[in-house]
Image (cartoon, rainbow, N blue to C red; front, side):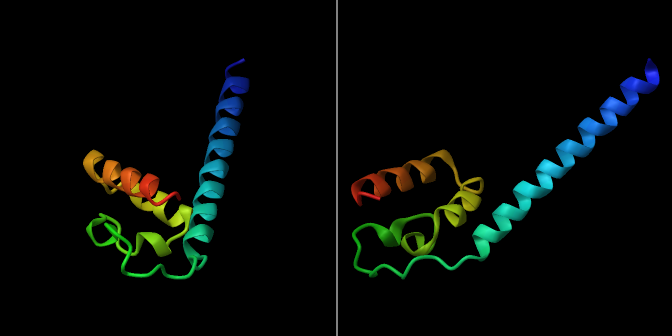
Amino acid sequence: MREEAETSMREDLKSTSREAVEKSEVREQEAAQPGPPAAPESRAGAKELPIQDYDSLTTGQITNRLAELSGEQIKRLRDYSGSQNH
């Protein structure tokens, strides 16, 4: 019985590890993909954003950077994105 529990725990750990690696690989692939063409610098409010070149990044690239931002910075991005009809 104990041996079965240990085997089950090992399998769960392997599965969790595989999932983490797969997610990491997906994030790396998204970050490596080129973003859309750069947006004009004249876009209102773009220079005050906490993520440099926000308008030229893919969703995956932006998502990867969100963990580094404060709640106020995320709110500014959300407000900007909503006002630009993204």
